[in-house]
Length: 267
Image 1 (cartoon, rainbow, N blue to C red):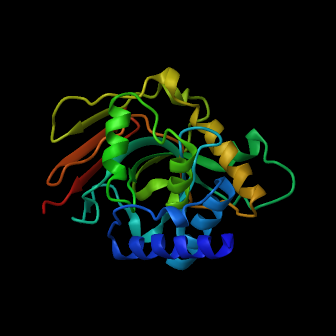
Image 2 (spheres, rainbow, N blue to C red; image 1 turned 90 degrees about the vertical axis):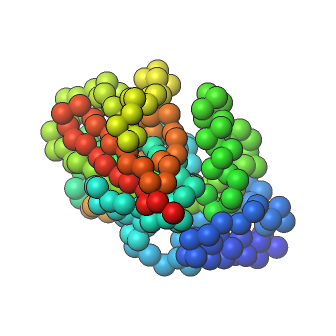
């Protein structure tokens, strides 16, 4: 039965997450068969993990994969990530949001003005990863080649079930006065170990971050889930996603608005 498959798949993902390990592949007989099953599996995974939620990640556009960000994998600016838990990571520098007040679930959709009034701008680094051993390498190779990832429904559904590939969050500066800014025009310089500035996703290939926040607020409300004050929303990467090597330090500077530093411990 579908319910048994969802529960068993969620247990496997939750235990792998709690152990900080990976599995070689997700069993095909447990794989979700549509987006509704994938979402139900993620919900069950989160319930079994049982941690406070500090925010939500969205896969780059309205309708993109939604995933939770958990308290134990939320780090302060300047943190050193533990090895080996973060050995297979992908960094995504984000122009996102931090909620100032709750946006509880309700019947009527949220309007742009009330969501904007409830949010500050927040700069963060989302750490993307997978409970599946080879998924990160596949994603890095595809994105570096300018190809979509995932590139089929079955892979997308497994990714959604796997908490939409969230691995963690590095919290950065918060800006209160932001609504007059063009968020897509905010410049980023990302460097690892003081090297060259790393490539960015072209502006024309990114979605207005606030449009993603508005969609997420209404999609979660439709599911009976509210956004809460303090929640971080990461709407999609500004840089071409890439791994942070062990023993290295990344610095992301968003013009004069703030800087985020994160390191990965050496083995």
